[in-house]
Amino acid sequence: MVQIIEFETQETTIEGLALIRMKQVIEDRGTVREFFRASAFEAAGIPLPAFRQVNVTETNPGAIRGMHGEAMVKLIAIAHGTAWGAWVDARPESPTRGAVFQTPLEPGVQIIVPEGVCNGFQSTGDSPTQYVYCFTDEWVPGMTGVAITPLDPALGIDWPLPVDTGDRSRISEKDLAAPTLAEVLARG
Image (cartoon, rainbow, N blue to C red; front, side):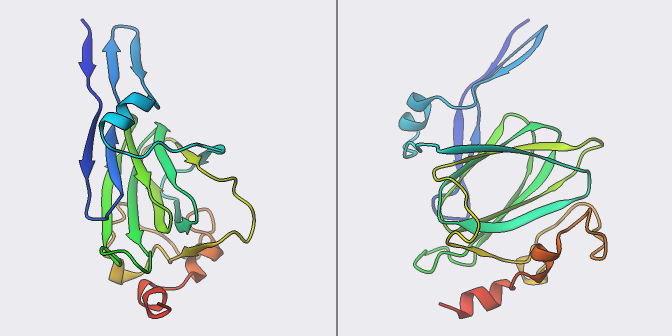
């Protein structure tokens, strides 16, 4: 038996951040997912990103990465495993500045992340999560961007697994030391 899940998009609480369900064909041998189809993005009214770099991270269960908002558009997806995704609008001129969106992530779900929107996630499965990042620019150390500590209580992020802030296998020193949302918003 063949099941087809059609491509669809869903607006979020952050302007320009879209949740995407990839077209998927599920059958006896497994699943085929369309990672990117230009015509589907065009039909949904999503500007076509021109990717210049693609990374895959493998993150151990319970570990958190983020919240980082570089000066580039990202298309993110889970290749294997599950995660809890969270995004914070840190753009100075955005009408949704300070808004937070969070959702469970699994294979078949993507998020298009505008420039300046902070992206973070926690690996939630029993095995490492493979998280795919497509960037519209090549990442370089010191590039323009903003970071917010993912453990800022003001964000209201419901990280599903407890985080030991002294355990570097769960959260990096850099992410812990990042400013709070209030500090970022006060900068203007």
